[in-house]
Image 1 (cartoon, rainbow, N blue to C red):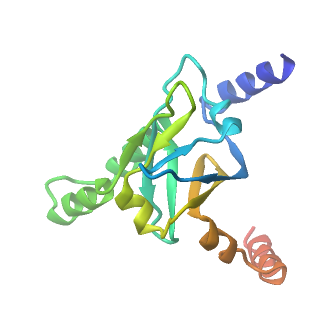
Image 2 (cartoon, rainbow, N blue to C red):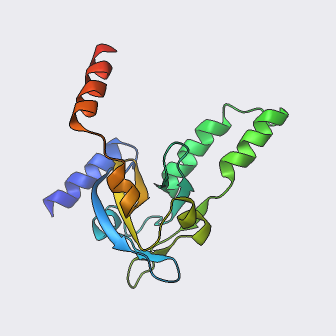
Image 3 (cartoon, rainbow, N blue to C red):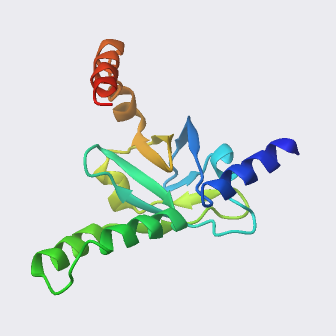
Length: 166
């Protein structure tokens, strides 16, 4: 019980932002459904909005999954920098909104249905990895997730570079 109140107080201080941590494997069924990891599902308030937005990552072969609230916050931030009477800005926004899906875990099993087009775009065949990445969840084809890991030496090199930027 104490732990739940701690999570609530953390959310209140961070403007209801949820922090996702951990890695969970799951199998995709023939209809593109996958069971949403219960540790992530438990972070979403029962009385709140349980919808998520799923989109392709612009740098990696993975999908990004945001709470609907976080998606709205980020989209508003992007929109605030655009002038929709500018053709390039309008084209950017159209592309920004392309190939997005709203998903919601079903009440019975907690499954989500991810459109086949999105799953194919990251090379999913049978198994995915849900990887908590702070305010978002990354969804990877299991093989690609394992192949994306950087070496300890590379990690330390990047950490050293970042520490010098302060």
